[in-house]
Image (cartoon, rainbow, N blue to C red; front, side, top):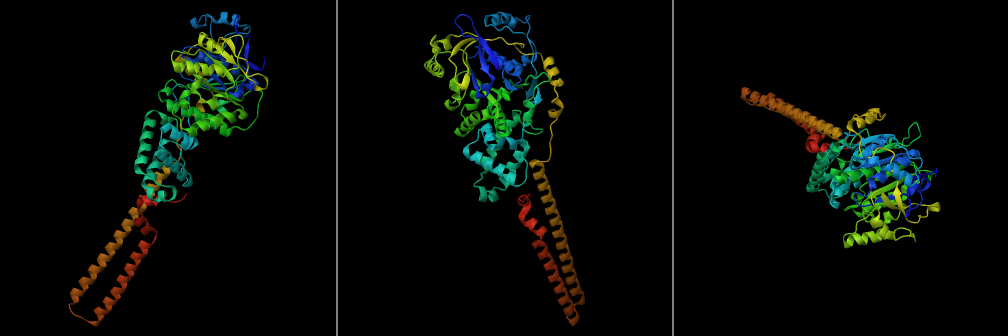
Length: 516
């Protein structure tokens, strides 16, 4: 099948060759199964198949095994010994060892090109999810984003958001009149969550240069799609950051890509490994957003494939949109497991040749129960399938080999060096300095006027003592002196009514609350 990705086949008791049609690959998919049943290899062979057909791929390498996509497999490699026999069994006549064009990415910048985005691009909803904020705290975060926009304060990195929250706390009385109550306790709670996030290494993720989506959608000179691999073995230690990042990336694709309908092949295939992390304790608003993205992003030419242990991990409304399915073995040791197994079997189009529930329980490692979309998007009859062997190396490449791939990438110079342009942190710091300088100048000017008044007053007293008697001339001088004192007082009052005086009255922090 020229316009498809070969998934596998079988011998006696198994299906004929199973293909994932490219024109229905944007209808999304599911790879499920218990630990150790072969999900990672299935992910690897699908990535190979899409790349070979000129479709770029984005996937996360949770275990650190998928870097082998960059290197051809070898018959001498011990894990590849049974592959040739498997290829013969399923009729994979064109099977050969081959490496694929790979770009490595890493949120922390250690095992790939750094991936960055700005705080503003991620937005308050996802950051609230990332920080596990309460409803009241999320409201304050929304206020911070709104005021930052109105005041012309770009939120690019974590220190920008932290500075904005400090400003919000200091000006809470003024801001609360317009946007609602802002408590110091809630602001402090958000700041503590940001500190935890910073300690997890997320400070490197927020900033510039931000990732450009077109860099994930490249093809090589030979026409094969680029396979973008996110190093996630360390990232998984902060599972909420991992899930939020992938959801952000999916949302960016949804927001930025134009509508193209149903293309002959996807513009990008996105694999979401450990998908259950996205939905664990997720608020309804977030689940609704994922459902919306999954439903509409296929018209942008993007196929989304969720990888998880059990289909039950995926909300029903989203699971119903996953048309292409590869179901590895499920264990059924408890009543809950048996119920989940039965529900998984019921989502497939029945095959009269075998019992689907029994097949899901019995398939071995490297085998699966599959169902691919057929003409007009109709789900195919469920089949037992031997998954084809990968052409690339099974298992990770060496650190030196990874470094060579990263060094040869044309994206290295673009993303290697972080930028720190003027944003909320610098603007607020400058406003504080300007207000402090103005207040200091006003105080100096006031002190100078006070000195002048004291000197004049002392001079009047001295002059009156020297004369020692009342005459008309001293009286006239006193009248002139009184006029001068009145004039000096008017000068002081005028100064206090002016810009400098207002700054003294308003104070340093109040002076920060001004327009763009």
